[in-house]
Image (cartoon, rainbow, N blue to C red; front, side, top):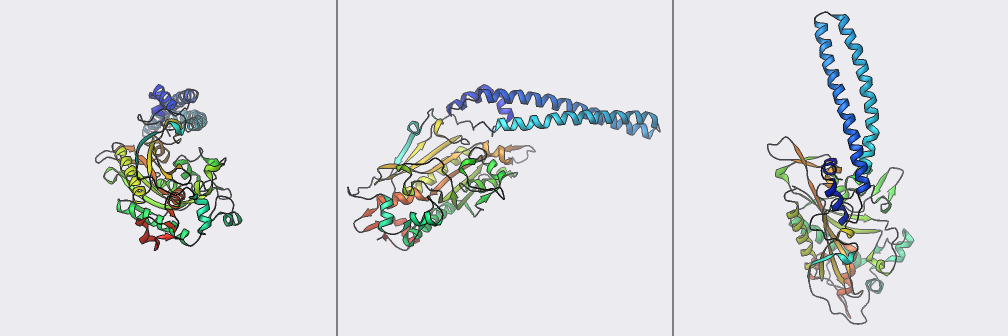
Length: 424
């Protein structure tokens, strides 16, 4: 979340930047400034009374040493009055601080200065493209027909066991999933990421720390009895490892990678664009997370983008990288690059990764800080994450782009993981 100082000292700037995200912040910021003014005034009075009480307490000590007990008793009576006044002020302060926080968390993160204006995905900027468009026959099948033909994924059985959007993988379909997960993890480890195997359920504090709560509460599966949430991505537990942690500057950036199943309710989704593997309630994903120094976080972002680009390149998938416009960005992001791969049978681009820098937005919620060598003061770190990669649409593109009369050819980079080179 934004800090009170950011809002108080640069309110006009905050309002103008949030307009890039098509967010009108004027009313909320007016409330924040008013509440902050009240809070500071009460805090000033409280501090003044506390200083006065400390002074009186010292006077009492001196009087007692001088055996002037009558005067000391008079001063004690004064402390009772001061304590009552301080309590009354603190009783007023507590709800104001709660209201202030509740208003601040309504504000999205400020977009980076390079974020283009825009309202829809059509306004995103294509940064670059790579790979070669596959040539497939006119009667080529979309992946939802291919998986039936080769009996590798069963959506109907998933409906029987759980519900729509929970597919069951069989045989070479299951092995392809496992191969992709291991390939992505191995590539991340080679790039200097430490593998983490986190819980797939998190508490409310973790959801708040990464900005998933309260913003995306309706999209998360909630185990109400224990008040736990099934994770929408490994970003949530992995980033929260650093909640309430003070890091040393020399250790930054901290780089972690994790495979987890992910769970999303995807409420309100429908239509042909969510058919088959295009949108699921449960799916597998490998996530990369960095905690970085503010001066070097955009270098980390570039490194993460290059890492994801190397993955789709090694899978021989045609891809493009988009810089998201303000209207298509997440609540928490300062700058996001999306990766899309070409789905030959569907004849459209499929999003397979988002790589984002959140700057201090998550770190302020998490109280994730670092200390420079020789400096007593701590500073908020920058947090970043990216999909490296999400499996369902990668699998869809692999199946569609590599189909032939003989079967579906497995990308050569994966054959040492799968143990086979064709699905037939």
